[in-house]
Length: 248
Image (cartoon, rainbow, N blue to C red; front, side, top):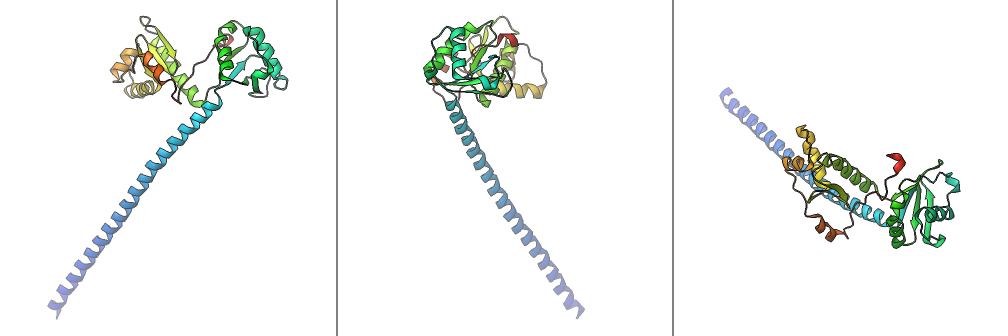
């Protein structure tokens, strides 16, 4: 009787083990399937998020196309008006600006001498003022473009690398649009950011931007003349029109 019972128990044990294995594999497959679905959804959300940020950036830049920011008016926020802006710009820039040329004026803050955001009626009027920005050199007031957060971050990156590039006096370095030009080569923000990350990882000290980018396998972009072909791109970085002299 015992000899007949033992095989039956062994068979039951094997069946239990087999069932447990099948259940475990089934659960693992279900979990893996859900994980893959979640990962796929995360990818889709990241793409959607990137597209939304891009569209928002375009809209924000479009809303700032006709804007300038004035620094150093030395007036209380409550005293800022279109007439004051016209009078100040006309006397400082030697231009003929009227109230009709200004769509909106509002202080950025509540303190005295706070920056003032000015929306012009047309882009051409803004460009006229921008072209006269050199007239403000040595004066207490200055003007700049109304940049988005992304544009300010890009400009900061360009200026940081401009300082590095100018350590090599053998090549002329300057910022043109959304690129850093060093000698005959130009580098966009993405290339400079990639270089910075690689440089941080390697903890190396560099002295010349061309050598830095070469050592870190970052290829320069096309000749700066070719960048003009992308002038209509919705994502561009505009540099400061006139650096405020009393902040240097």
